[in-house]
Length: 243
Image (cartoon, rainbow, N blue to C red; front, side):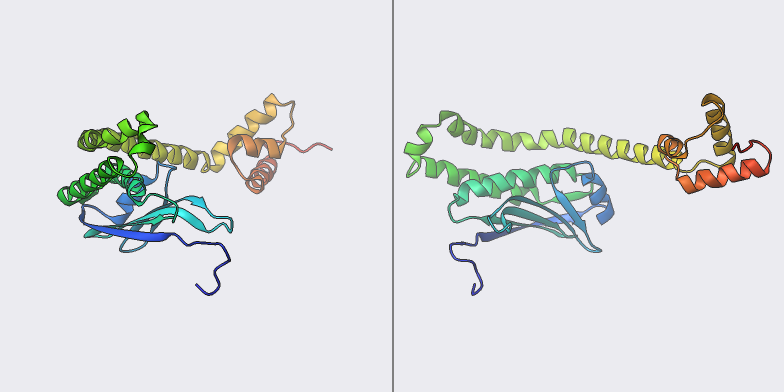
């Protein structure tokens, strides 16, 4: 690029697409992912984009990142591969994130598992083949890392059974979020009559005084509304102003 800063090497971006099927609505997928803090989510009318910027360069531009785009009939995975990074290991790292996201949305989105598992299996084969050739000396110094990658085949087979647990967790988190929203909404929507009773009880328990700021903070009510309720109570003769 003509305006690229000296010494800055742009990462390459790889893309893979799998057939998929939307079983519900785009909003249902967004709700399934609302409980996780690991990814950012962007929704439009015909697609849902899940993305994460893992690291940035010195100019704060994305360096390590991946983007998962869900459409009604396909899933597209785009991910960066910096020049000094192993492309094969980078692919496995990104596929792990893809599988995690697919697990969470499995109730509302179905991916072609045959092509997905074949792709993951080929990626694992590439890493194992590399370890037995040019990388053997390096990886033999890190037995635990070598064992971890050899275990990926087994973990790949176990992903299907873990989907149920992940989906249950996502459903529980989503339900808890809705319950908290309902509680907050209830707190923010006291009737005038309820507020009058609350104000009266407050005054009686605070030496016939009321600190509107403290009351508002305690009951999550705006100060203008409290002032309106107080004026109404004074006009009705329920309370009297002093001083």
